[in-house]
Image (cartoon, rainbow, N blue to C red; front, side, top):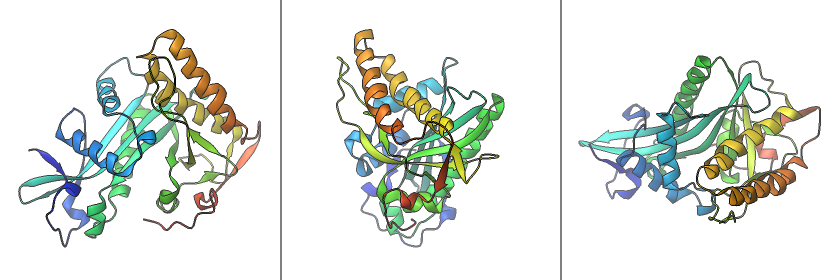
Length: 282
């Protein structure tokens, strides 16, 4: 059955309920991934949106024994009048920390809900996607004998209410930058780095009061390595890759690092304190 994006229809939907929504993984290219990407394009600016090809590459890595991390693609579907609609999408990557190999992080890259579904009174899609993704991530790390210690997200300011309601916390004082997602063949960034709000959800025995400075640095460096640098190594020449690595590590990471203490504990506080925002929970 072909899958459509709810927001591209003119049909009026009333009386929708979360019971009408079901969650399924996207494991192959097709109309589900295409609809999910069109939803992402409606919500995110180009500088913070990965290319469609990058999603195809992630799906290929999931089925490969050579992968270094585990990508999750989950979609929320609504089926009405013999038609299936995509109403939400979750994308995250589960990865072992570079310097704390007994710990792993689930880095949420995208979590989006159909604006039309919200307008129709359908709520809770994002929470259900997050719960399903966390279960997959936990199972994956259990198989590898590694503790899933944190969920992390690069949160845009308008979404801080949702992340606060979901129990995420902000490492106090951290000023986070998302590196450019695309570089040209010479290693020059196509976009500049973007200021985001880095938020974490401690899991298991991880403290909800504070996070060690070296662990926080490891979380960020692990994400930069797996989400930014590793994909570029597969497509760029060595000289170009050196420029990319220098840009990400010497320019972007150093600016972030300057806001993190060298040692000690960093308090974890409400994400709403990150920018003084008064955003409301979704």
